[in-house]
Amino acid sequence: MTSPLIPETYEQWHHCITVICRQPLTPEFVDKRIKALNDPKEHTTQRFVQLYGDQQRIRTIQWFEQSKAELASK
Image 1 (tube, helix red, strand yellow):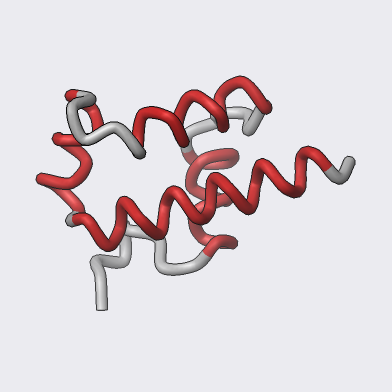
Image 2: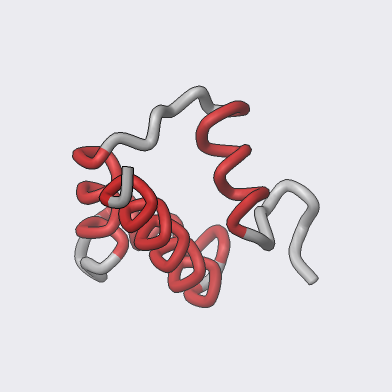
């Protein structure tokens, strides 16, 4: 079990990004985050893994991929 502040589901993650952080999930933003989270040399990715672990990084990539698919279907 993770911290209540760390999303465990797509719905929690989506709410965190779009409502709490007020970050629109645009195709450009989603692609940028997928690319960064897949780059182990990226400073923000290294910091993310340090704070939340690699399993959360993998989950987050999956959520961004899901968001990307939803955007493409609109």
